[in-house]
Image (tube, rainbow, N blue to C red; front, side, top):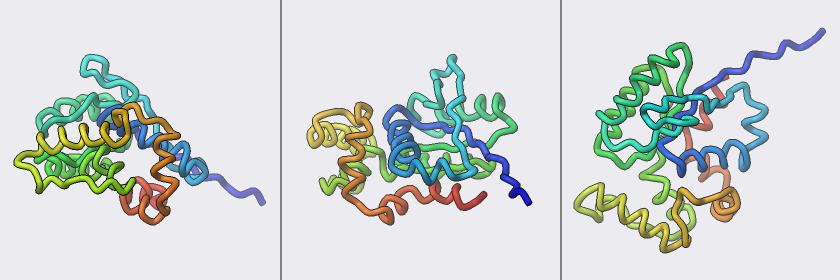
Length: 190
């Protein structure tokens, strides 16, 4: 008797920008390629709304709840019958409200704590400062970008697979999966 193969479940990927997109791609297409290839969960990069600067699912940054809503509403309208998976930094005061909005609409949100630069510095053992050390989140974000460039010699958006590998190959799967719990939980849902 032939075994029935289930249908793939597609999620439209919406990443905050190039750094988050590259990090997501490294995890799903390189580091855990086999795991994601064997899953029924597939991610699509087809979100395209040029008038908003959205291309291949890259949102071109998120600065506030209002800014996010101005991008989210047209995405929901244009891709109304599809699940969306958001891969965003968690360094905005509006992050909890953004998370609530996404989840209320049945979509997925994987936050990067606090932002991609901070996470990568932390995973690489560079011991970056935390938001509590700053008067504002904007000064914290600026610090993370400068510290990242100082430690790695390039901007996070310029990181390639080999650069991510130099960090992720030195830490265990458990720690990686703890930092991306929503991403890996999608694999268990189908």
